[in-house]
Image 1 (cartoon, rainbow, N blue to C red):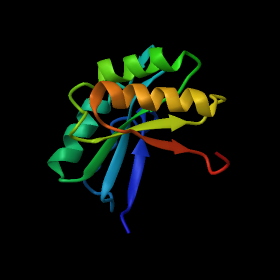
Image 2 (tube, rainbow, N blue to C red):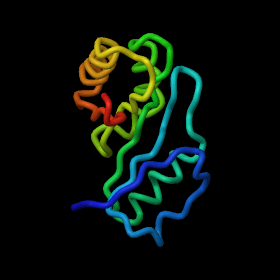
Image 3 (cartoon, rainbow, N blue to C red):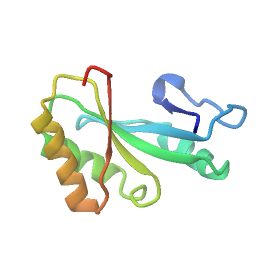
Image 4 (tube, one colour):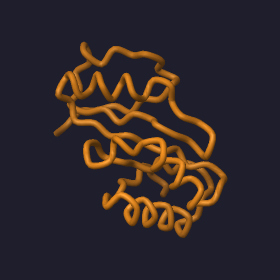
Length: 120
C-alpha cells in the first residue's frame, strides 16, 4: 500500500522530506482564477525526493470548458510527468465532470483521475 497526502495552500510551504509518504498530490488550480503559489515548489520538492506526485484542479462554478482550459494552461509542464486530478467536491453534475475530463484528455492525451467524497 502506498501512503500519501494531498496539499493545498492551506498547508503553506510544508516540508515533505520528513513525512512518511510515498506520494503527494498538490493543488494547482481552482475555477478560472486561482493558482496555488506553493504548487511549483512542492512539485519540485516531490521530484527531488523521488516521490510519486500529482497535481489537481479544484472544481468550481464555471463551465467545464473554462475550467479545463485554465487547468491545462496553468499546468502545461506537468502533464505526462505527474498525475492530473480533478477534485470534485461541489455541486457539479456528472455531466460537468465528464466534460471536464474529456477536454483534458483530448487536449493533453492524459486521462485525469477524479478525486471526490465517498458519497459521489
